[in-house]
Image (cartoon, rainbow over all chains, first blue to last red; front, top):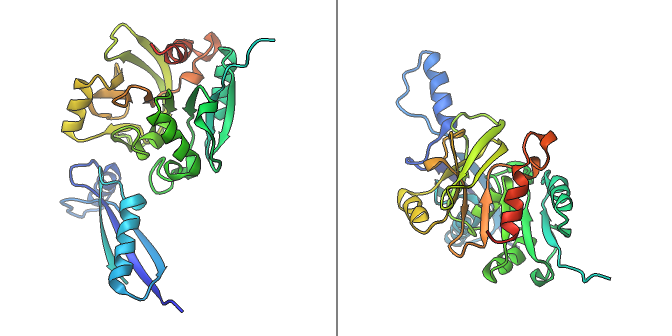
Amino acid sequence: MGKVMKFRIQVMPRIEALDPQGRAVQGALERLGFSVKDCRIGKSILVEVNETDKAKGKKLAEEMAQKLLANPLIETFEVESV
Amino acid sequence: MRSEAKPVGILRFLGTNCDADVVSACDTLKIPNKYIWWADHFNFEEYSAFILPGGFSYGDYLRAGALAARSPAMDDVRRGAIAGYPILGICNGFQILCESELLPGVLTKNVSQNFQDEWVDLEGVTETTKKYRLPIAHSMGRFYATEEKIESLFEQNQVWLKYSKNPNGSLKDIAGITNEMGNVRALMPHPERAMHDWMGSRDGRNLFEEWLSGK
């Protein structure tokens, strides 16, 4: 029986790619009185895979990010085991 | 009996919503056409060309066009593209073609952050005499690619259309591009919504006719 492992894939807009959502939220934070230098909004994707080997599981999650979850033109990603 | 011309294949993904308008545009121009369902594989040789209509495939989940780009029918669209068949992407179809890597770059959120539904003026980039007045209706229409890529697109004559007045922050005012071979092309505005005077413009007819005649 395989064990279920969870990985979080954090996808963030690249610094050079415009992030209008982050910019709008930064404006709103500033209007609330917060001094914010930068604000960027990405997404967090949690996947569960049937895998016992942590390194293999992580590799699978990275493959998912490369094939679908992130667009390398505008996004970067990080995979962590959770 | 006249010989049956091969139809233009019109792709339908879950959430495509300009499919019927594209059929109507084809019917207006007397172009035989046939729907292709996203989950089906098909033989591209049974068609003369392909149109990927606009809409919100998969509700724009993950990224606009990302999930549709990885659907079974797109495998065969890709085969057709490699074989040199004409492929036209409109709005969400443009996003799907970029996500399929059949076209370079990506369409990102409008700088305004809003869904924009308005008329725009377009001009041809390699063929500067061509002008069209067409409607846009998108929130993810800002064309983005690296600076080097954009430069090479202009050098290789792959920039097809640009906005006379940039509505969405698209880099270099780009509204439509082609692949290197020139058989795959896409634009954010909707030619199928500009087919008759009562629609506000009939420039879409010229665009479809030029596309089909390879001009």
